[in-house]
Image 1: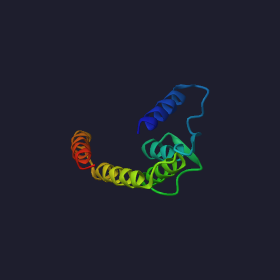
Image 2: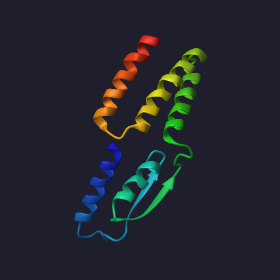
Image 3: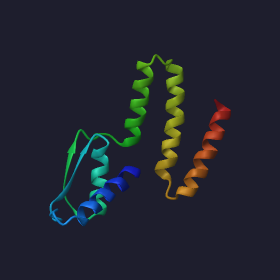
Length: 120
């Protein structure tokens, strides 16, 4: 979401410029930008088009878990540690996915990690 507000600020800047055709502003998103560009476009009537390059083909939480696993394996992390990390992170991602309120999310994640540290 932080990056989307940055993009929105850039679009607003373009809209303020006289030499810019306001009907032809588009976004090109590469990799994570392939997630951010559609987020911004759905909230802004100023975006005429988007181009997505190498965006993700799986949900973000699954992608992050896969990346963490692959990076851990490449770093020589033991399988038992990788499995523990997977379980911890999946639990945190589940909490985030179910959250509708930032304050409650902060509380739920803090509680989750305090409890998780005790069990591991």
